[in-house]
Length: 99
Image (cartoon, rainbow, N blue to C red; front, side, top):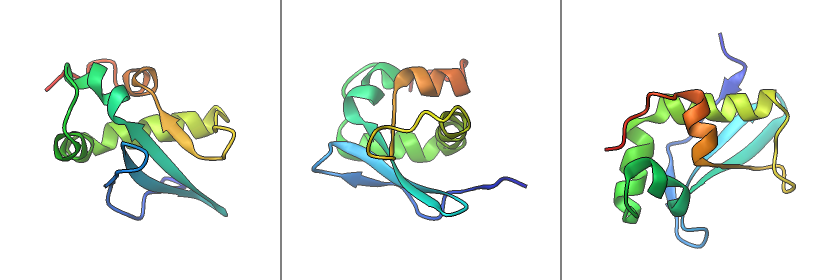
């Protein structure tokens, strides 16, 4: 059983131009952001917001694993949130194909 909880569905954060979702570990509750520019190298082009959201949702276990790895490595961003990079995602699942 995982100590990581992802209670909410991802959504598009227009201000950040990123897909956002929440992670909880014990008392910690943080935001996870996957910027459109970060997704660009994963999908092979700059995705529209709905395409970016769909890509994260379709590959949710991969993104959740990348978040878990960042937290376990204690690599939180200065604002205590997590801004996933393509490197984080590929580290969690090197075989992830572009769509």
